[in-house]
Length: 347
Image 1 (tube, rainbow, N blue to C red):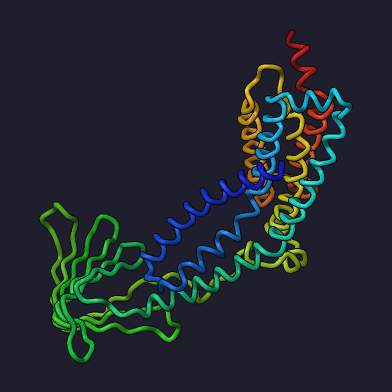
Image 2 (image 1 turned 135 degrees about the vertical axis):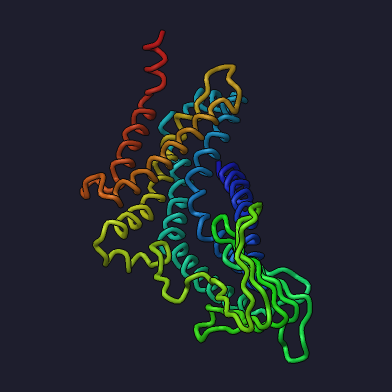
């Protein structure tokens, strides 16, 4: 079981890392992050989300291990030697308890620390990226691609020469050309303004013949930057001790979410043992889809309960615990032969 849990969790982690790597690289390319900080952001994001994989990895790993044992008749031989159904919970709990403890440590302490460090590192990377000078002959985008700046060459004094700027404002497109330009960075290190000299500006909707034309000697165009100066720490970036001192619904929902993930590991482990039992002539992967559906329903219902609780749609006394109580009852029903009784009732 431990080998299967480790293998499944590593495989799921690899899929998550590939997805996160694409997102980090796309944002780094858009905001011109320094190369040295991209790998750190990627690692912190992986640590922040890895605890979510533990419940699914445990359930799938246990079901796969039991599927092999039942399919190769090893469980039948063990039961013939006196290995009872309840004895199987001993190695299962011996595996689930350390995994739950690891998930609790990661979700309660490591993930918030990684999230706060990732936010600080993102702000540092963004400031460093904004400080990177314009490269002549290359396009530079701002404001999620709505503003594009291009300079053909640069003068000896650092000014940009033969500058082109395209801005999108809804359906309208603003095209600006200038002989010279220089960039000014605000004191906060985030706000930027490009000052253009001796140029022309055209504004209109592509495909239409009406447009406005403006000739100027000097023109200042602010370059939009993400708002980091007044940004408050998000809930997932705050420590569990800080959240416990708060009494608002979002903070309580975040605390219950953090404590709920280790509980999901234990509930999933109890469900995995009866799910992994196979009837004669069933394939070893026959119950894998049931484990996936179980985790999908459990995880999505917990996420929905968190949203309902944050918006005041559910009573404060229920919180997110009613979802875990529901699946604890379902795990007990499975443990006491719920599937077997259901099959006998259908016959």
